Image (cartoon, rainbow, N blue to C red):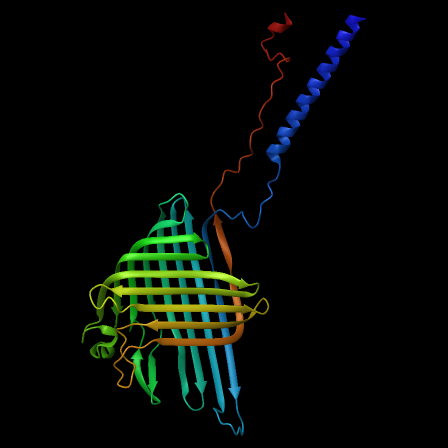
Length: 347
């Protein structure tokens, strides 16, 4: 009787052991090939190159007929904004490139036609991560800013030639540190910055426009530079992009800070229709074409609002190459199985 019980317990233990082993193997297989659920808020695409942009076009028109309150019989305003960016990120290296182009034109019966917006602005910034948190970068920055067409000031209604392509053009080359706590905000600080003011138009150069010496075409300045960039979604259909540049010339009146600020709000109505508002402000101590005598600097302000067509350029990612080979399944060996394949166990 005791022998029967012992044999019964032995076979029961063997059955449980074999089944437990099968369960372990199946569990390992399921865990290895189990799909990983990604948290959209926490997981991000591991990209090498990223590019995208935005195109916005606005149109406004007005007309009057026998209007007692007065005004222009006809007015037409066109404005456009184009943005394109290309980003690179690998290991400790980052390279950000951003291009902004603004063009605007207004036509009225009393004043005729003239441009009311004209800007080309390119920024390229390289960074090398120097801390474990990934927020501080040793960086170099290049910035070019100018315009496409001739520009005039209209003091007393008389057009006065004031600017043209590459007259002026502003070039900045800076080395410093870039602080990026999030993907929405960056602060670049440079104590070593070279800034060039370029005036290629001979007439403007002879007038000592934009601080260049008479007859010369380039003014070089050396100083400190800082730029702040911020972009966010304020509400579900309201986006904001802003930038502030500050420059102090060590060599000439460093207390007079050159200031450049641009703000862009987009209010999405549907997929392609949007309202936009932009506010730009500039102060440059070398731009002395304002005041009663036309020889004083002043804060320049440009504000535009419009309703028009908006087309975001699809963001494209070039992912980091990954190893796509299927993972190997660990082998579990049953010690009870004789793996001798020489044939000796048959003797």
